[in-house]
Image 1 (tube, protein in one colour):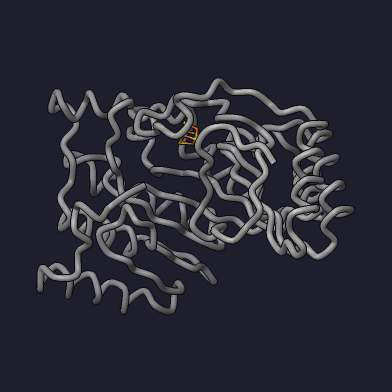
Image 2 (image 1 turned 180 degrees about the vertical axis):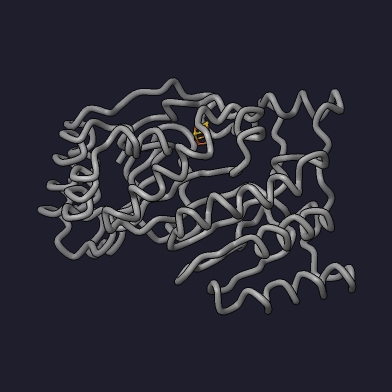
Length: 289
Ligand code: SF4
């Protein structure tokens, strides 16, 4: 198998076989994201992908999960996805779950019937980066999509039967908009009712536009306590069912995990306890992406 550049995957795909079906991200313009800045986007050829899959089959006796990378693998035309998924079914009959990243735009370019077909061919979970539910913030970070389109995309994934995991970035609104970020994100997520919510916390990297904004003091970073207040406001504004909430990413100051709505009050209480005691925060030097 050939991996090109650094390969990223969600924390829950730590034990998955990762197959790069694209290199980089087709959008590659979000102001905070440095993941694919050094990669020129391209769709890998079917032959290259087949070779990687065959190579992996020789190396690994048992593959339970496969993750399709890079940034927005769902951007692939349906024909390519169909061929890749069928090849996986043939080579890895033991594989129980295939996951992929998909941007809202990628989802909206697929019909519901196509998403259902992908589900039937093995795509069990789709990871969609929302980053924020606020239109103002989405514009500022150059996400290239509005809150209403995110809702449309999220609902479409849910209606296809594919499990949906959405990712939000704590602190992405800065000091000026952290309540706006929490409230609007709560509204968007509630309208989608995803299966999983994953929380990351903004970390500013040098080769990103947001780094310049922080340096010029246009963007004011939140401290750990403000991040907690934002998370509390977000959780208060979530009205979801049967949803797993995880903030177990190494960028986060605190791990807060639970099932919603059952654990809502406990999660809020945990946040209050942390704010009151000023204890339990991950040290800055241990935070990472
Ligand atoms: S956040 Fe996602 S969509 Fe935005 S540039 Fe990074 S990989 Fe691409």
